[in-house]
Image (cartoon, rainbow, N blue to C red; front, side):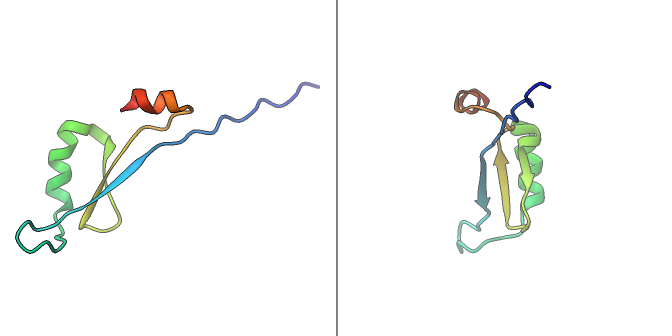
Length: 72
């Protein structure tokens, strides 16, 4: 009987961005137009967040810190 293959844990980084009106500094529900533009630069790494006043950018899952640096 052979030993089980160890499971490789993977991780990623997510960064949330609140969307604020530059004049009032209050959050605004502008996720859809912001993501439309962000997707041109980040592809599916730009994502909706639970609130429409926030978006997120994320890395793809990786297994090592070196992989995270390369995912940049």
